[in-house]
Amino acid sequence: MGKFRSSRFVALVAAVMLGPLAAPIADACDSGTVRDAALMAERGVYRLCVFVKSDDARASDEIKRIESRINDPAAKLNVQVERVDVDNPNVDWESYGIPSAPPETPVAALIGEGGMPKRAFVLDHWQPYPTDDDLAAIQTSPAREKIKDGIASHWAVVLYSPGDPALGADSTLPDELFKEVETEWAEKQSPGVTTVRFDRSDPAERMLRAFTGIDAEGPAWAGIVFGRGKVLAPPLTGSAITKENIGKLLEGLTVPCTCLQESSVLGLDIPMTWDARLDEVIASIKPAGGYFETMLDPAGQPAPAAIAPQPQPGRQVLGIAVAAAIALALVAVTATGVVVYRARRGAA
Image 1 (spheres, helix red, strand yellow):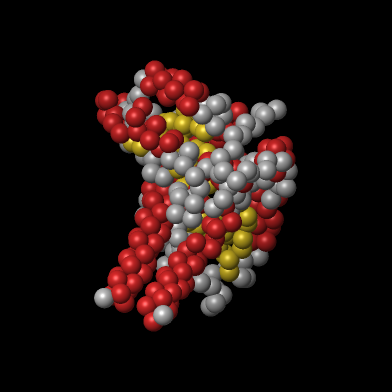
Image 2 (tube, rainbow, N blue to C red; image 1 turned 90 degrees about the vertical axis):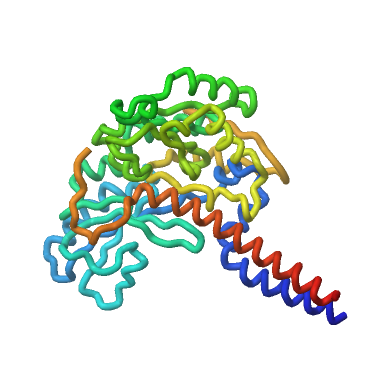
């Protein structure tokens, strides 16, 4: 009886340790595969924070202009506008991903959250305010529109950006490689995958470039987009972009969704609009107890240095997702080890 109580107590401690980590994702644990669960999950929301002084007379008009472009219910952009008075002594700067108030105001920053537990990161910023062109680039771009079309008509999307030609073999991959991936996965997972290419030098793709963290002089980059616009971590770069490696990433979406293998800790959502018609189709999907198949019916400017220096935001973005998955697995393994050790010790 004593051994049972001891083991049960340790198991309870392990559950308490794991509880805060598992709670945010528990609702999606029985929704088929990782890819299927991602279709059912809510998208991650970014905050477009406008840092101003409380007595800034112009701030209100500028924020209204920004809100009129961003807060369009029909567009369903996963970005919310937030005003932050920098002279408010109660501001928690860590929750905005910066160590303290910006040295100069006004300044606007797009801030996301990721990891487990969640932490904030700065994706991009503008000084003094984003222009109408900047706001348009936050909302949409040619590549993100193609991503939505791809999500609507395929099982997943391979997002690809050629690199700097000066890098030779690491700069551009042959079209045949992606055609082979598409052919193979059309047989493995109907309706297969499609490839979306984007030009990292296009100013309209500033948001996608910041999200992926790629440089103009960097190697080729490829990532898997699934669910409602989530990029699977980690992406592939340079010589690592092979048919085999792309296949391994795609295979990760076919495994059953569990608390340790769940879409919310395996990637981050791209900031982009979402068509209401896609929500209606997804809402009608009733997940079975296990796997279910779904096909939706498709109907370079430098950033200002106003905020204190931050790590490369895009590289940090998908790194957060990788770190979260590793941390969650380590906690689970540690807790299980404690339970086994105490049980054996009690038996001895």
